[in-house]
Length: 323
Image 1 (cartoon, helix red, strand yellow):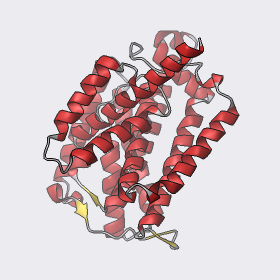
Image 2 (image 1 turned 90 degrees about the vertical axis):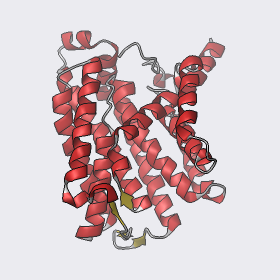
Image 3 (image 1 turned 180 degrees about the vertical axis):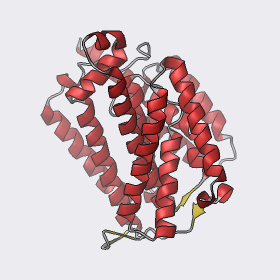
């Protein structure tokens, strides 16, 4: 996996903490005013998928593990959250915690099996297990099969904030997304994150230094699964339904495409990739032109012309100019 272009390991250290705080302030300001010009539902969908792509990037971009089964965590958490809201009649925060917890448990099970292999074998194992989970969701009664779970109220957050109000829901999802991205940034720039990068770059050398690589891989896999589950729970809360689409292999393919388009191994890359993909889907949804053809062409252009992804190429160009 080290052949995949990623952000240089020392890149973050070149930026001062002040510039990071300025960037965060600009992002928060943009999210505060975005509903004035952009449809809030579209923005919330974008934020959910940006978090999903960032969670996947934690595994691929910083640990070097390509998973073809992340839809299982995304959709599994969506199902649990929707079931908790509709059947158990719990508050939104409890339903989201239940969804994230289910994704973590599922990530622990799948990760413990998959990390025994490397490369394409790891990817195929995650795909196979995710497909098994897909057929599990198709058969068990509580998911309602192809009908899915739908038609539930969003409820009141902590019993106080009515999430049926669009703007309340928007700011809640925005806050959760920003906090999650900050958590990913902290993980990546911690000593734990440095070991993940070492595993990505040279796993045998990391083993020779005395690190338990399997444990670090499993920890990264579970963290990525939990964050992907949070994205799925927020999406279920947004659209008030969970269906088989959320656990299908197509969803795993979409999140891979998002990460590659934006640039793996970068913090902003998955967000940009999610914006491109969701934007194209929204634009061509009512045009009658097949969206899959557009996405396929976009991916081909990215692979041929932007091998590092959009953000990766921009950073590479800026570094060359500085040099």
